[in-house]
Image (cartoon, rainbow, N blue to C red; front, top):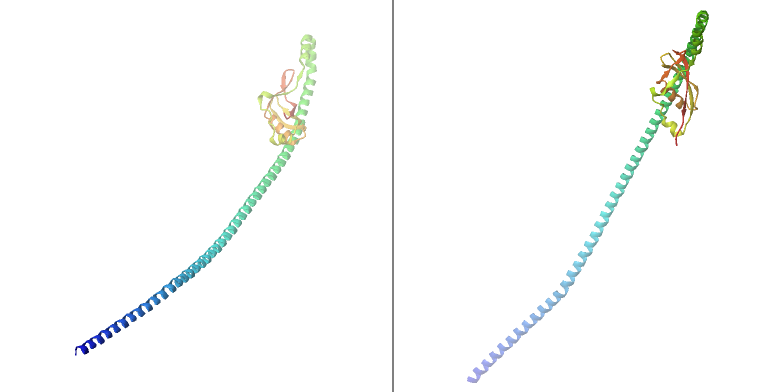
Amino acid sequence: MNDAVGTVDRRQGLGQSAESVIAIALLCVCAAAGLAAWLLSGDELPELAADNSAIAKVTSVQGDKKLQSEEQAVLAAWQNRLDGEFSQREQNLRQQAQLVTMQQQSEALAMAQASAEAAGRAAEVAEARARNAEKERLLALAKIRENAVDTSVNKPAAASKQAASKPSEVSESLALATTVPASIDWNSCARPEYPDESVRFGQQGTVTMSFLVDAEGKPADGKIVDSSGTRRLDYRALSALSRCQFEPERVNGKAVASLAQVRFTWKLTR
């Protein structure tokens, strides 16, 4: 009886031991499977993550390069547009400067033509005045000569009477019958100033002028008798000397109207 009980106990103990071994084996198998799965999952995940990171990096680099190329293209287009606008503006400014220069040149030419025409008209007026002055001078000389003839005709009788009564007085009057020609008073006016154009072109010469000087020494009807070779110098001298005061011609000490000639020399000093 005891043996049977002991046998049953041993069988039960062996059964429990077998179950424990099986359970442990199953646990080991599960652990091995889990470890294998973990190992497999741990090897593949880094590779996939690395591949995804590389793909992302490549995509990012490509995107940056594309964006940079697009920015460079936009900048190049703006640069070309700005260069074109600057070139057009510079060309417009150059054209405006040329137009202004041409306008100034045309205005200067018009002014030069106007001044030349004015000078021509002034010369014509001066020549007309000179012709009128010559006529008046001739008339004045004719009157002076007529007066001189009248006085010379009327004086013989008186002179003969005086000669019969006072011979010494007649000799003195004949001694005083002298003529002092008219002369210009340089202290009464300013000398002619050299024209800038004549200085620039080196123009020189001597001009001879004639004036009808009255008994008070005032000149009138100036005229160019002998030119210096330059009309500008001639009329500058004539205009200046027309403002001068003259010492009138004196006959027997008496001031009379006469025709006076004056020479003026234009000379450049180096």
